[in-house]
Structure formats: structure tokens, C-alpha cells
Image 1: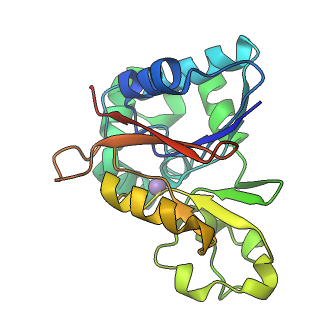
Image 2 (image 1 turned 135 degrees about the horizontal axis):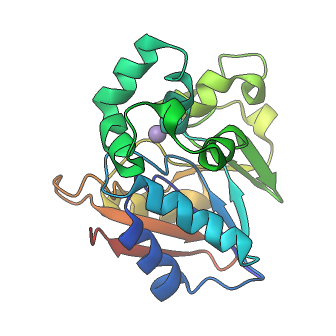
Length: 226
Ligand SMILES: [Mn+2]
């Protein structure tokens, strides 16, 4: 049994499948933590959700967290300001992939999937969250905004609060080399961002989807193959 985390798939279905099937070789006894941002920007948002639902149906053990892009989709259903932000950040590609002109036209089974996503999850000494934790708040795990949107929060970590736990997150893309560098620092640091910018393959060094095998302390990468 392995624990594996992947974040920020951003509609890159081919890369996601290749990473899971050819690199990670996911097994039914593994626990897979997906840290949100399944949709937007890349070519096949619907396909990514279909694949996740299929894996769950086949009995694979998935723990799916919410990302800010799923929040934008849900909020856009009743907030026109959010709709504009979503459209500017990949929402148009997601609507196209579902063949709809508005989020509320997306079939209910997908909306249900988005609605039931968790904001964070803990397992052993690991705390999984999409963006980070806002330690300027009294209880970072009650602060939805921080968990979905925060950046550059690492300098504010309260180590009294965190104890021996390590925070695994995505949201802020970086080059593959930078991910590897921070992976090597994980022995001394208690936070690790696994977003290697899969969908941003036009940026030098970016364009990889990363799987972090926590059990064996290994990284697997797949280059964008969309
Ligand atoms: Mn994000």
C-alpha cells in the first residue's frame, strides 16, 4: 500500500493517465490523494473527471480535494463577478469540454463531484490541501479562502500548531527542478509543493505533472503530452 499525491491536473487527461498507468502504476490497495484543480486551461476537463469517477467505480481509493478552479466553477453559478474571473482563467475551455454555455448546465453528477470535494485531509503526519494554510487566521483549517487561494504563506507557518506534520500542496506552479529541490529539502522543511506546472508547458522548465509517493519517498514525473 502506497500513499500518492498529485495536484493541478488542469484538464491534462493524457498526461494524468500516462503518469498513473505507466509511471506510478496505481494499484487498488494504494491511496491516491488528488489536491484539486482538475479542470480549466488544458484540453479535456470533462475527460479528467470521467476518469476519476471511473477509477472510483473500479474500486481505486481516491481522496479528492477542492481547488480554487472548482470553487470558481461552483461560485460562477450564482455570482456574475466570479463567472468573469472563471472565464478569464480557463472556464471557457471547461464549458466547451462539457458542451455547455454555463456552469449550471453541466450534468448533475459532475456538479455533485465538485460539491463534495474536501478542503483538506490528514493522514499520518501529512496534511493535504490545495493552496496552503493562512496562519494569520486563528484556525487555518477553518479558513476556506486560505486553503483554496493562498500564496507565499509558508513564511507564516506556526510550528507550535503544525507539530511534526508536513503540508503537501499544489496551486503555485514551478519548474520541475524546483520541485525536486524542495523535495530534497523536505527532511528539514515541513511543506512541499508538488505542482510542476503541467499545463504551463510554454514556460521553460515547467510542463510536468508530478506524483509524490509518500510511502517510498519518491517522485514520478510525466511531461505534458496533450
Ligand atoms: Mn490552484
